[in-house]
Length: 178
Image (cartoon, rainbow, N blue to C red):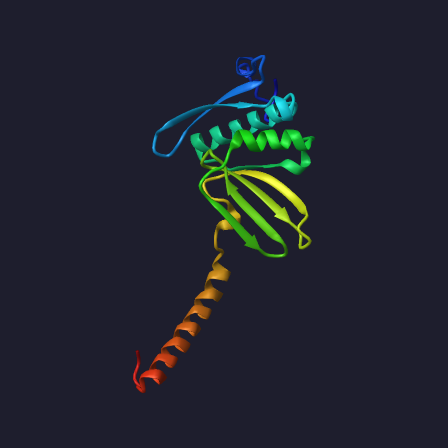
C-alpha cells in the first residue's frame, strides 16, 4: 500500500484480519501504553479508504514526534464515504481537550485519543460543515492567540479594571485608589 508521501507500508497486511478488527496502540504522555481493537466490520463494512488515511495520519504523527514537523490533512479533499470518515473518527478516538470557536460560524477543535492529533470541523453560520481536517501539531494554530488581538484585549481589560476600581471607590465612599 502506498500513501500520499510515497512511503510504502509493508505492515499493512499484518494489521488486517479476517474479522476486520484492527489492533491499535498508542502511548499517552504518562508513558502508559494502551492497546485496543477497533472493528471496522458491521455497520462500517470494509475499511475502504479509511486505512490509507489512517496510515497517512500515522506517518504525520511520527514526523511530529521525530522532528517537530507539523502537518494537516484536509478530509474534505479526500474520497471518503460517510462510513469511512466515521471509521477514521472511531480509530482516532476522543482525547481530553475540546474547544469551540465562534467566528463567522462555529469551529470545533477536538483532540483525538492520540495527543498531537486534532480533529477540526468548521461550520458556516447556518451550521453546515464547510471544512474538516486533521491537524498534527502540539497545539492547533486556531487555538493560539495572536499578538494584535492580545494587545487590543489587554487595553480592554485595563479599561474594565479601571471601571471596577472606580465603582469600588464610589461604593466605599473613597476618593483614593483601590
